[in-house]
Length: 544
Image 1: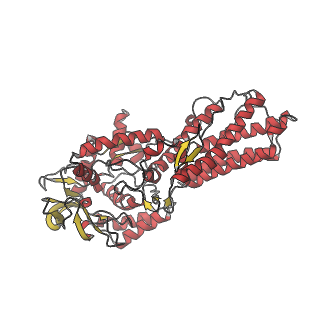
Image 2 (image 1 turned 90 degrees about the vertical axis):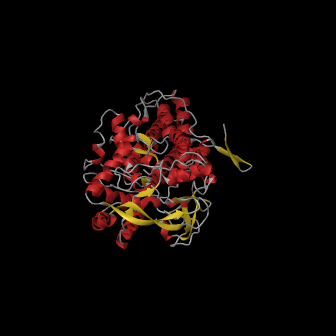
Image 3 (image 1 turned 135 degrees about the vertical axis):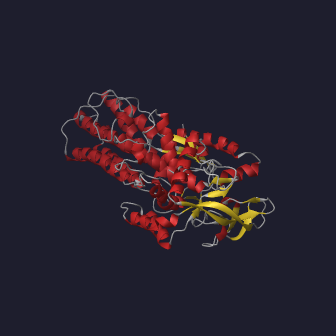
């Protein structure tokens, strides 16, 4: 999944756009018995890092060392299960980037060319892309960056900006000659177009955008810059003061992180199972502003290098907005994700984001939506179902799964639904329809609540013990299945439910199936899964 710049705290837009969807997908596949390697890391060479370092008058590494640990803290508290979350500052990453650079250079896919780059005469230095701001030539946004417009999402070159200005001094920069290495992207237009047209199951906005971009014509892109921060150029042709630019080296991190993971596991060749085996699937979870680099630029590099798997799918999400504005670290839009975890349970945040994933269109997220989803759905629907069934079983059958009597059609329908919901949710997750998968699971939870309202075991407990035993048994079977279906979304509370059901081990060891609890199994305590969020004076607080 996308590598976040280590220049500031991550916000919920980052989480919803790339990291939560990847974790849901990975948790499902692990539980289904598939081998999973989930890697990413902090992008420490992105110019946003050096911009912040310049503003604070510190070295870029100091910025990285401040925010990378915050990312690790967020993953732990939110339950994002990376196999490795590293940085682009490792020796392994530099070696892999150098290897890829040299091979492409030898094959003629990288070449030298004199070009023009903005130079700030007042600062006396060339300006990397993000050190230049101006008006977007496509949408007129006046704060577009030299590499991309945050408003329309178009990828830019600094020379395309209208009324450019230096972020260092505010002056108008001028163009000066400088020599750089270029990647011959234009060479791969036809193979990319053929490959993109042959993708099936991709999100339409991703596939259409990518095909449209390639059909417009691909242009070679500079992959070095006049910088003193980043991965070094492995040949000396250009002389000092040059670095491989982040747009080329960052996505190579997917490969270098896989190799680093393999080294840490003591199996240096283990990375090959995901990169060279034709049966392996590779999924890139990103936001829509990264589509070009993951469906066009990176695949072209992979084709040029040879022998490595192209993306199976790039399920790019649209934006999460806050009061209509795109969440952005650089523009200070959206609170940090860690700050939300100080106020809400991790599963409440995961649930609200998953229920509103911007899979097909931008989604506006508010704190009120987190509160509503928690109180109206987690507490009132799922939490209420689990708590009342467990509590009544403790009261009526001494805390043990009851032996059911004869099952009628309604009972059988609920048990069939339990098997079906696990299968359906699994299929939807495999297709990366995560929002629909969660809605399917919660829809069945509502159905089971309806079943209980029909059967009224709290009333039949006084007059028909066998009927009560059957109703509670069926409900416990449904809860067991729902616990599996909801686990990728709600890992913390799902483990609590699993323990309350008296099942052995932990839920992630059970496999992706709808099992039935054995009659006579001793249940654990009926612990409240979610706390209702009370609001007072515009601020949220959790009730005890």
